[in-house]
Image 1: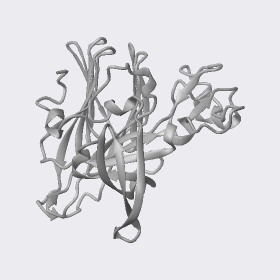
Image 2: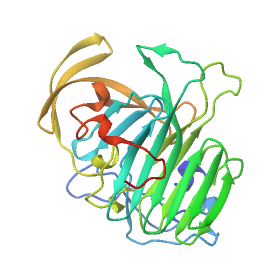
Image 3: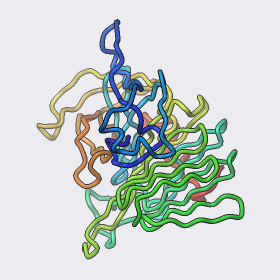
Image 4: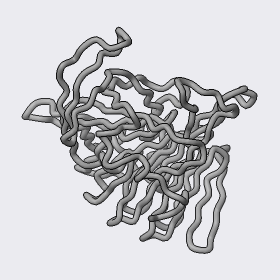
Length: 311
């Protein structure tokens, strides 16, 4: 994380290497900790939060919501990736993660472009606010494109994106990289990263927005749900009958998932973990119609009334 995001975390003393696999490359995205290198030391090995973890496994499976908003679900066991978009009106709040066992809830509120411009018969929307709640720790975070607000009981702390800093407050650890991203760790729960996307202040159409990434979802319980949370569990699918689509570069196919037969399209979505401006193209099978048939229930089931609500 230190080398990838250029900030200090409690794990910066690790060397990340691929473990030996006598059964072949299983592509489970397992990273193994070892002793620190000089490069790791330069990222903060000597700071008071650093320590060495021996034989500690960290699972980096990509669960993302970013952009308009684009959901990216990596499925390591099938060596493939699924994606879908959500099209809703500005102001709508969507539940992304809900774990009744750990008490963690993540919601996101949509914002729109400065002007209501219709693109392909829909409005461009993005996440302008992210709310993260840990009921067991009595901690709430409200993250906007301007500030990061910590609510712990009656106490309130407001931070800015203008600084690079590490803050430890009880069981909460926040790592802010100036104008780039925020790492959030609450107790023994999962680690989240919120990516800040800045646009030109005088841009006639677009405005700043946020992306949300999960780094180690294995910390969440089997009861986790939400638009992203439901995919923290194993999911299997079959793709066949690959055929030309309307775009010669994006073939269509038939997918069977959760007992549903869907028409999907091979395309690309952006992963902004390494580059918050340009991003990296991720090949995925795109599920149309707000992920219908892939997500449990209907989109309306994930709309919530309060950014910091726990349902």
